[in-house]
Image (cartoon, rainbow, N blue to C red; front, side, top):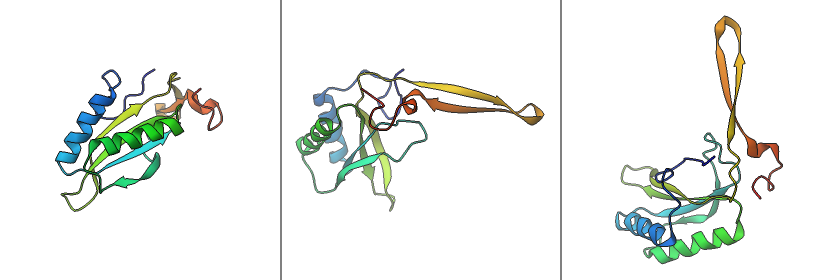
Length: 139
């Protein structure tokens, strides 16, 4: 099952040239970039681990791609996401976010359905990756 989070999640994985073009677009608009990674891409897990600090001072897409590749080397079996922030509104607002790396195997999710009183139905999303301990979820 392919995780669909971010701007280009329904497209095939972006090449480094396509990532560089998106970073150049973000930097032209004055949006600084940051890189995040996780081994738990649950839809409600919006707080991924940050790779370094946001790159407020970079103006060259090659510098951002270098950091993406360093994160890839450090975490080859994790999801890696690139974010671009727009501060024009006086607060940090995500203007662009997309996944730049996925594990080779994406186990997917299941829905756990529970019937309660008054014919109410509760549905929970359970990622199959959580059946394994952290650090061993994607191999």
